[in-house]
Amino acid sequence: QVRLVESGGGLVQAGGSLRLSCAASRSIFSIYTMGWYRQAPGKQRELVATIAVTSSTAYEDSVKGRFTISRDNAKNTVYLQMNSLKPDDTAVYYCNVPRGTTVLLSWGQGTQVTVSS
Image (cartoon, rainbow, N blue to C red; front, side, top):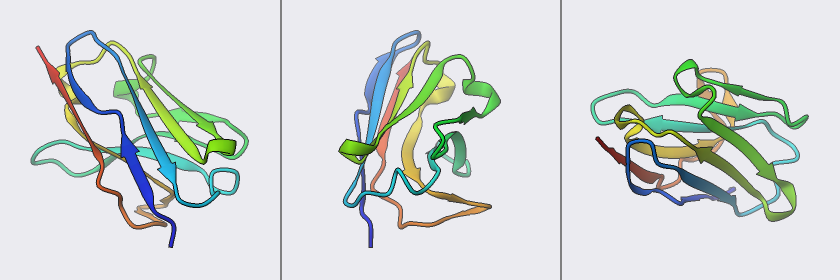
């Protein structure tokens, strides 16, 4: 079973930036589309960004132009650069392999992002 470990979260003021990392225990990023998800308190987990094997990317509307997903296959790591952060971005962020309405792998522990106003 592949293990995912997210890191890089923290407390930041509105307008600030963070870069999240997701490391996999095995080489999977050259095989699968990867996604970053987030779950805010009291809300369902949502998919905010994906990067395909071809490196094409897609973003949820609320993060377009502010978040950038990237991948380093050699390091088995996928990143999420988050700029111009807003309080609404406050959530626990996770990575996984999207499979329709579900995911392929077990969830990692996530990384907390808190944006203060």
